Image (cartoon, rainbow, N blue to C red; front, side, top):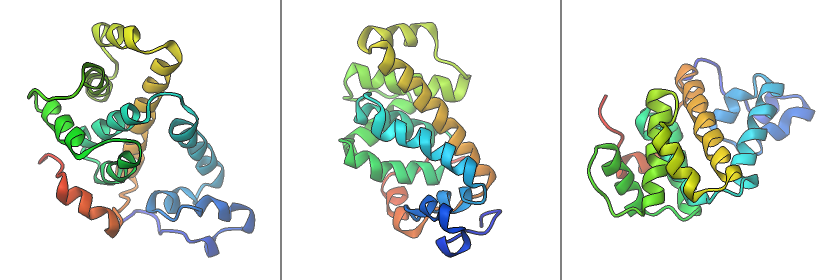
Length: 183
């Protein structure tokens, strides 16, 4: 159960009702602070729609963060979102294998993106070798967008956990299909 009540459009001033254009639990909690919600939405929109980083690689990095942190909300939402950006069921299973230290059929760049996301999530920063490998394959803009994406979603999972935001029923099927690791 979330630590704040979930707001609806009717709870908001007319000038803030647009904050719930996507009626998801996270936004219904963030709406308690409209200015913060707008800032949060701004970076999230840039990452998803403004960045030139390949959408599949971006979503794999986000899934890696959600999986490592056992964030059911983030993970389930980005499984669905990832499918829209070319992530496949095989990609998700490969990400799980890579996380467990098993080999996968992912291409080398995707493996390196996942390694970078693991390092930033578990160790605070990417190692020099991972960063150098990514720099060989991505331009500076794309690499910085990847780093910002991983950092932002590490922040998102902390908001979700602290506010105890519930996974909506329609996203539960993704958790059943691709379970999170046991604690």
